[in-house]
Image 1: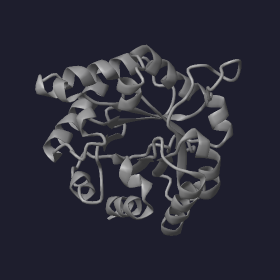
Image 2 (image 1 turned 30 degrees about the vertical axis):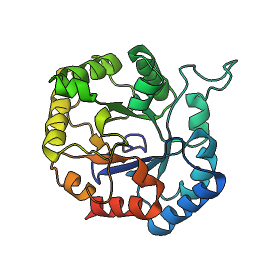
Image 3 (image 1 turned 90 degrees about the vertical axis):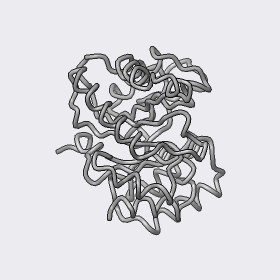
Length: 254
């Protein structure tokens, strides 16, 4: 199979680190050195640094794991779009994948469903894999609207159109991101199963990898990975320390 066909293989399970808006030249270099020292080549491990550090991270970790971008421009190729970074640019830099629809992009930066769908398409047009993030807020969960919200996010991003590139879905309940409050294994398992059912209902492969993210750390990763239907983890703060990130990878490989 080609590299892109195996990008989001379910075995071994995917462990992805989202570094968000963190890092200086020195700290990123130290983080990369620590990860490289403890990680043999593992294509199912991914890191998503800021745009500013992509080139250095690719240089230091590109032979150890895959490197992706946290965002992508809605505009194709290149042009007079100050501050934007296109999919073509990312692919040219050797990026393998992008994050789309992360809750911080939706709720903090106000990205609409229409924009998220467009960014997803731009990623595929550039030959990149897409990790689509979905998740409900605390109020939506309290109202019993979790499934309704997840259905809306999947349908607005994917619809019933044929997928045009590699896809993984990351379930990240908004109330568990950066709060220290992780969803219970029962809550996670139910949501993962339901997402697969919804993917099937949209005509997509229910066997697409579905990950969990939300305050994942060394203490709860093992319990989360014990869920039979868990295809991997999207790690936030714990991916900013080589020791904790490598320990989570090790737990996924046991």
